[in-house]
Length: 300
Image (tube, rainbow, N blue to C red; front, top):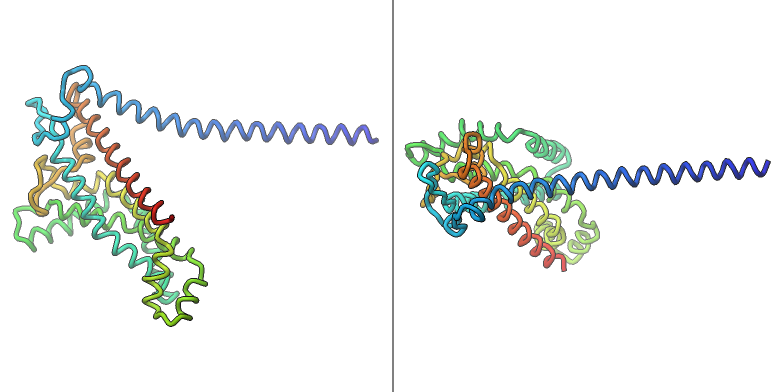
């Protein structure tokens, strides 16, 4: 009898170890697939994008600081696209960050529960709208209003891009900031109110600073969506590869430049578009590193 019990226990233990080993292998394979996929994508883009500078004698400096993009004339300068991306991203952050944080604060700290239950799902619903629909909205509503308001030949401009991107990043900033604000211990608020601070003072001097790490994470995520957005931007940017001198000028960001021409590009032209992707990738990495460092300093 005891021997049978031991045998059953041993078989049970073997089955548990076998299941654990198989599960561990599955997890490992899943992680490897994710990492390998990332490395393959990065490797392919860098391989294709570096060919013109390594084997064809093109200058990377001229590529970065060149002001003309005329593939038919063998001119590949992406400075106008870089500036357009920088201006559009900064402009959308200037609009999107304050509105997003204030909206999250309103939902958590100010709005009645009934109203908050309506606003919060509505904001989350914005995140599920396809980007092309934002572009259609911008083209049908924002662009004509800019054109009429400022008496322009056309309303497709840097300003339209900034407004559309600011709207698109709002769901991310609001949702993540709301979670961060809710995570602040209630004792902080109670202590501040007990010391005589008003509700508004408590909100802006205690609660929001306490949630700053989560809010910065929201900004990073919103920034990622703004930089990488393409379809909505194509419809409202005007897509002129020239350096913008005014917020009303037509622009062509880096992502738009790639999408517009990749379908028919070949040879050096195609490789230069991959090189544009490298610049965009580096641009995103630098911005994320800067914001991450700021976030870490704030936490410390």
